[in-house]
Image 1 (tube, rainbow, N blue to C red):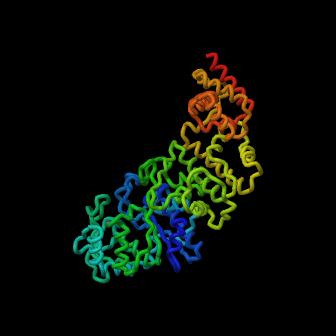
Image 2: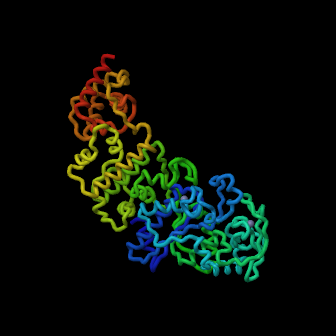
Image 3: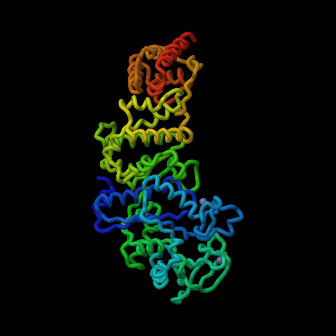
Length: 528
Ligand SMILES: [Zn+2]
Ligand SMILES: [Zn+2]
């Protein structure tokens, strides 16, 4: 059984699953792991007949603290203001900085089949007064909150410190204010010029009522208040928040001891690492969620996150590597195994569930999807580069019958993905230019390589697999290492020493051209 199904079997009664994000800048692909995991939990619960509500929150009252993302003239004015009150940096396409970046991220959800029942924006919630009771309780029980911070996180606040950030009525900043002295109606506050290093307060002091949007709770209390307000029962979170004494521990303790409610079940998940580095906000080309989603189709993107269990880190380095073709191959293997076909290599327990939850449509016919013909991604990427090839015709020949409408869709999606991959992440060796004339690189062929090419010139192989088998067999007969055999073929056709799978390369070309080129290369090498 899959981890999500295990979880669904463990709970009873109606469930509210929730997830939230601070829209502090461009969201990188690793941040999709949370939404994919939460969506999968919601699907597993529903499949078990459990009434489920799926929420997604945007924590857009959090202060702007990323100077790098602001223009120089905006830094003094905007640092420390709620993200919901900072203007859209891209112009006026959205009503705020928060709506811009959260919007880009949320747009990828629909394509991935992630459909929360409700989105909530904290900037919409505070003004309604729904959080006022939680603000009042936090202020009444400030001593308990301070004691929790000291005990759980070893963070010590001064005696009069209150767990509340006033939105400064003068400068609009929320990250610069310190609240003290709650009298049951109002709090005293100061907007401190030096209260934080990353933003400058305006020195306003006074007393205000903290209700109806005039203030926000610090994140740990806001999180716990969300759980109570929405009745959240399951909320996974990243391992950065799940460490001992970290954000989750603090919010769990606040939920129990301040708001007197059991916190939701946590499913802590690991990061997605790009080339061994944790993917952090705003670094590296092609790391943005919406950029990767342009190359990797939704099914494979879901699969990327669901293939390992949540507690396993994911290593994904698409830049100049075969990571994306390998992702397709692995997901095709899961599909084939689900369809009952024999596959090479190990499969984890629960592979059928992994395949099912990778499908974009939760109501898809799993058996039909698994059985659909899926052309190998690398092969497609090669065919697309060979002039004069009718790709559809080749794929139909490979399948052995006409494509179904669904298979035609899959082919179109993969063709687009392969083109995008060749334009962006593909390594040099995947880029193929078949040389119209015999390349000079054949001059360096040795005798055994020449013999191999000569023998191959009389082979009448059809498919890439047949070619591949013929190359291996003949190389063995000639006691030529496989690497030297491929080297000879790449030299003869591409004028270089590396390339895509040699069998596929030969199968993609006109048979007469292949025979002539093999013979010419064998002879040219011989006379040189
Ligand atoms: Zn915008
Ligand atoms: Zn101020």
